[in-house]
Every structure is written in C-alpha cells, then in structure tokens.
Length: 115
Length: 114
Image 1 (tube, chains in turn yellow, brown):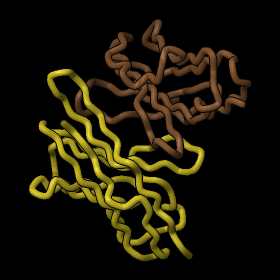
Image 2 (cartoon, chains in turn green, purple; image 1 turned 90 degrees about the vertical axis):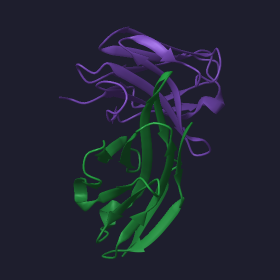
Image 3 (cartoon, rainbow over the protein chains, first blue to last red; image 1 turned 180 degrees about the vertical axis):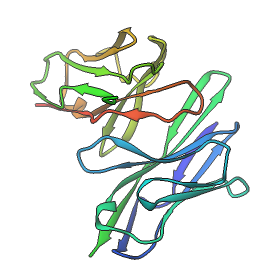
C-alpha cells in the first residue's frame, strides 16, 4: 500500500518568516517524491523532486525538501516567505508495484502569507 | 515545448448535455493522466494511459464518463449526459516513463454544469 499524509491543511506565516509544510508517506517500494504548487486558477507546477539521489533537494523559488527515510518524511521548507508563495501545495508519492504505476497525492496544504 | 495543452479552459453547459474535454500531452511522453479537482474531494485520478492504452480506469465515476487516446498526441474525456455534480476542474497531465518521472500538468478545464 502507498499513502501520503500532509499534516496541516492550512499554514499561515508572516512575510519574511520561515515556511514548513509537512508530509509523511508510506510505501512498500522505493518511491519518488514530489512537491507541487498550485496557484489560484492554475495547474500544478513542479517545485522539486526526490528520486533516490541526494536526500536534500533544492527546488524553484528558494524551496527545498529533505527526504528522511527513518521518519518517512519529506517536509518542504523555505527560509523566508514571500507574498507570492501563497498557494496550495501538494506532496506526491510515485512508485511501482506489481500492478504497475502508483501515484498518490496528499490532501494539500494551503499556505497563507500575511504582510 | 508548449507543455500540456487543454481545451476548453472554461465550459458552461446545461444538465444533460454532452461535454468533451481535450488534451494534447507533451511530445514524446508516454503516460497521460486525467484528474478531477473539487473542493470537497480534492484531486482524484480518473484514468491513465500508457502508450495510448488505458491502464487504470477505476477512478472513472460511472458509465457517463469515457476517455480515449486515439494517438500519442491527443486524448479526450467525455461526459454524457452531464450532471451538476460533474462541475469541477479537470486536469490532464503527462509524463515520460513510468515509475518515478514527474507529471507535467495542463492549466485545467473548468466545467460548470447548470
């Protein structure tokens, strides 16, 4: 079985303060992990991905995520929030099983940035 | 590359009408996915194709929904007859290779059924 849990449905931060969006996963196989961002009325855009190379992954717009196998986590961070970061963020797990391709989305975290 | 292209971007129709949503994946990608997004249910996978062949359609809500991929550069999602509960944003996504590749999403088709 494969699952993704985004621990917070909403996160609110002030501009200039750090961002932490939490994601835990479970997978019977060695998965790939992704973070996507969705701005209002837009499609999903890839922020970053982990595919079993370096455990600390850097993405676009100053975001990064650390893969921690022992904690089955893939939390998304950014040192300093910007107003333009306000959006919905999805953690995604993709892996293979005997049936083929499995791709699982988390429920999403809405990030609000206060001036 | 132009990315994944979906049409129409917005569709407003009346209950009982047929709706056809279209998707052009990124050239060379061999996987194509159709998703539906609503406030209540979030993102739901409806169906996905590999090399134009439907692999998993277990997410298709009911027989009113059908999807085809006649060739590597075109797919359609059809709803007939449409109902108000079908109102949602429908996303198409494509990827290169299975297993671990990232998905590239289109901008979505916002469907409103009155």
